[in-house]
Amino acid sequence: MSSPENKETILVVDDTASTLEVLQRTLTAEGYTTYTVPNAVDALRLLEGTAVDLVITDLKMPRISGIDLIRHVRENYKDTAVMMITGYATVESAVEALKSGAEEYVAKPFTESELLAAVRRVVDKLCQRRAAALGPAPVPEFAYGLIGESPAMQRVFAAIRKASATSATVLITGESGSGKELVARAIHYSSTRAAAPFVPVNCGGIPESLLESELFGYVKGAFTGAHESRAGFFQTADGGTIFLDEIGETSIAMQVKLLRVLQDKEVRMVGDARVRTVDVRIIAATNKDLHSLIQSRVFREELYYRINVVAIEVPPLRARGSDIALLVRHFAEKFASELGKTVPRFSEKAMEALQNYAWPGNARELENVIQRIVVMYDDQVIEVPDLPSFARFSALRTTGVNRTLAEVEADHIRNVLANVGGNKTQAAQILGIDRKTLRKKITEYGLDL
Image (spheres, rainbow, N blue to C red):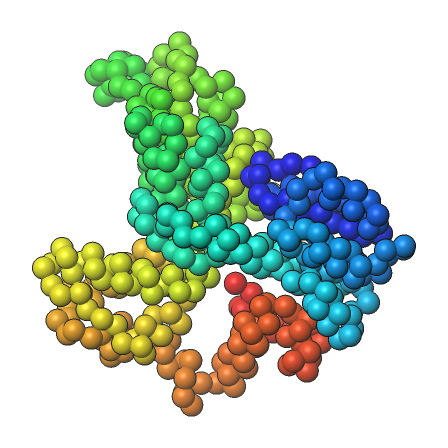
């Protein structure tokens, strides 16, 4: 079953029909092309004629076990990753699976987030191996202002390349300040529409009473003050791309009009009886949960499916690891150049404090902080006392005795999860608690990022 995002291809092997159904629904919803078979024999047949990126197999199955299937894949399909799931989790079976070549071992019952996190880790490793085999390649992260080397951003770059090759509608999701417009610009300027206009529209920044005339234009005399006809953003973007930021802020009435544009490629200017054809690619973005808005009946479900042909999720800065250091250097060089100053260097402790801060405003907040530092300080080396107070406090929370017992426990759980690659089964064993308790603590401390 193919997905609109055209991500990696996954084969799921399990002799329980309900498990196959759940995994196929979950993986397909994430954009993976997913095949399911009930036994290893059928899996071997499918592998002979179909390219598969990842095999997810159960442990205990009739005729050929999951361990035997893993060994076969490892010996015959070097470019295919393997992951095991099982309801018979033991230390011995985990060791045997990993020795046989499985890259992840997930015990049943598992949550959807646990499964998808494990799949992403395996896919990230596979992509890294493939990239290493190809040798050095052009680095795309600095194109159009996008900077990052983390696995999370590599997934964004891969999605941009795929989206740029089509004219399909794109929905970009992510927190405020995470770079959604930069992603939209990268898609446009990497596509065949690059020579045509890119028109960004902040739907949340235009009053509802004016949004229709701004988007679709109006004819002379359409309303008081309309002394001449004026084209709207859709006509301005003809042949190019219109970026509808904060689309979740639009009213139901406006959503109906947008749906018509998507369906018919036609717009009607305010006060005009005629419709006009436009050739416009639509990229929408939101920092809201559109599923919740649909359930609350403030966002139309059919519009959601129309704009969500290709979905790209921009990760928050706190989930991008070493990208923070890259961005700090980039912004420091940018503002030092503008001010004619020497580029400051950030001490190890200062950089650690910046990386420990949660950045609720994401890259936009980080950029503002670095600009303020470059403007205010002439020191060659920026130390922790030079940082804003919130970043200095983040340094205190992560070291020394100025921490509560809860903070120490949260740090220890975070470190254990990082050391086992996020595998909650292994982490629970190391911590000496059961998986249910670990999940509760992860939720309590907000560690499941």
